[in-house]
Figure 1: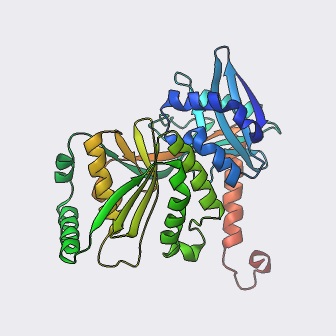
Figure 2: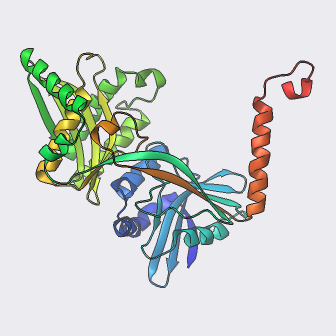
Figure 3: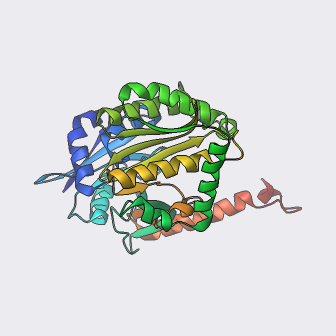
Length: 354
């Protein structure tokens, strides 16, 4: 087993190997090259490194790394990527593969952090001498199994009653509703512009995180969705009141799952829940056509998730340390230094106040 590191400008040369590992591991579709290439284009710093591990049978593992501090490296983890880009061929021990990588990273690396791992892909290892894991967030999923009627009957009474009241109100007010799905690459530019207009009218506009047609977020999501639509696996779901788009979901498919990457809705509508109305239509469609077996959210479980499903699992971080005793000493030192830096000034304690 031998690791080599490359500039990420070499990624295009390894696309076939990368996607074979994605298929082999049953990874979520956002780990495929159709997602990762535009992610590097728009959110990479140029300091990332592509790591490739080979044995006699070919490529065993691949990942993208970035140096985070002296002696410490993590998997590349921009906020748009729900899981860390860590791919290890089935039958291999991911921890052993990570240990081998840690020894190969240049500059005498002391720690390797594998961020946001999914126990559905890699069983969470037991912490040990040189390995530690840390909870990240719980993520929710809906299993598409059986009929929609059975699934819906299993939802809470309040959700079912609320959705029925909303639909009755729309009918009483004479507001026609339409659910549609955009799947063609040529539709994505307008879809992202529309999405940005909806998102930009809400709370995200104030934080500067909203998608816009010409910002990095907008350019990334357009390019990425165009990639997936060209493969027949990109979906933009829309709910319209008349001719007015009131909710949208950006989704991709792969490995038997659909991933809801982004959701937005018209926040000026106060007496209805457009996002919930859209989600009900999406799930009705999935239970009807059985295109996917699961709908994954890959985000922190919120109260609204639990109205649609009770299925959740904990994502985790994994750290591998070259010198565990040194790692523990560094952790204690950093904790102490952080405590001193944030401690409130004490009268007469000039040094601590600075």
